[in-house]
Length: 285
Length: 285
Image 1 (tube, rainbow over the protein chains, first blue to last red):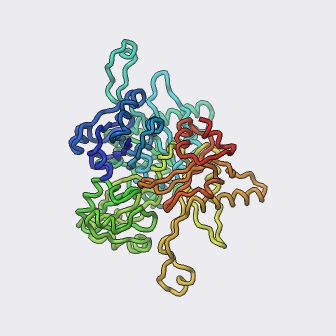
Image 2 (image 1 turned 180 degrees about the vertical axis):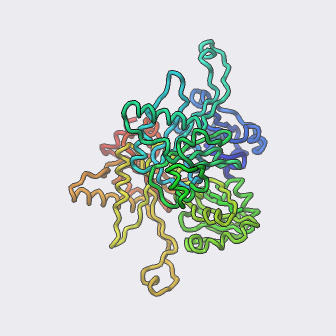
């Protein structure tokens, strides 16, 4: 049996009791290590589980999936994923490969950023399509995701923005020279995401378009959701450029405009708004 | 401290290790018992936790929240919610009351239907606004939610439909006579939801409108997601009227039309399609 087990969002103890039991009895335990991170490292997980973990990077999962599935029809193999196995990144590919080989699989679900963002008080059922914001480079500055933010906002829906993670990436030089030297991991902050969003807004204005959001649009920055030191800040997009949320992982929500009174009241618990015009809607309670 | 603890979706062992530790040490433990159910009952939870649970029905949480918060500034109180505390139903109101009384709170997240539906292979980030389908009565047959299905589909987004739960409801007669006699709980099935949807489609046609979905629209029925005996069925809306998914809880997804090849391949694992026209898109792989 192949078990896909969600680890949740905080630390080692956020695994479910059922998940932990399975981890303890599996013959091999893989840790997917490229789409997200916990606030604790692999060693803390190994100590808590009392098991050695095999780190599966993107290459391993995408190109050497057969290693993971080896003997999984005869013994139990666990594949651990931060958050939920079908959260932001689905692991459909691994499931399909298992199915083709006649290997049964089971999913042990957990919280993922896709549902845990509800902790800021915005109602989950009012979220539209989720977008990813990637690190811009000098030559690659994609803006196309912005259309989805616009559509969501036009329909009064909030947009969850997942922020880029770069793990085990090689510099162009090292890639060309075939040197397996990797750059330090990079995690996009709410500040960086907000700055890129404002640049898109300015580009749209220069082209004579009416941008779907402005500097004053109400946003929510979230950091380390589910961890002890989680931080949430509600304020304008402009304020998101400078708010200090600490270490990774960060996420950003662009609100959908109209909000339920309970949503507004919840956001006021996390308000960093000062004396701006849109702040009335939060401070005026 | 007030702890809001998600129980996940399956049975007693779907609580997180962290959640279980908190439950064991709290002075009082409430179980929210009106928005969802586990496949096991309160007694199974009590046995596994080694604790007595206080069942909090809607009235208790909405009108007697002060009982729940009593002394929570001095001792630890746990409020258990099936799924995630900020899942389909937020418990913002309880959090806001705690905040007003200066009682600190913490959320221990878990899987909820809002993210666990990813197990069918449809990509979570492509879901639009979530809708609720309520039991129709002879005199109350709301169709307004259908506009949101339409908007989602126009934008290529999937729609998760949460199906009605009626727990601890009184008949009109008992209500008028002030008798605290409650009807047996009712859980809407995928069959019932699909039949109501088809009736709306027919009503729209009679009014000369073009319905956003038809009998042939590809849907996914899900039952007891996260439990051992979970069932998933992918087929047309017409087929959802008769598919047998067993006991509650059920959910229904109306797909957004265009799909990623991986989504189609995953749905084919759960296909109940026969020789209909839309089945080509699944069977043709």
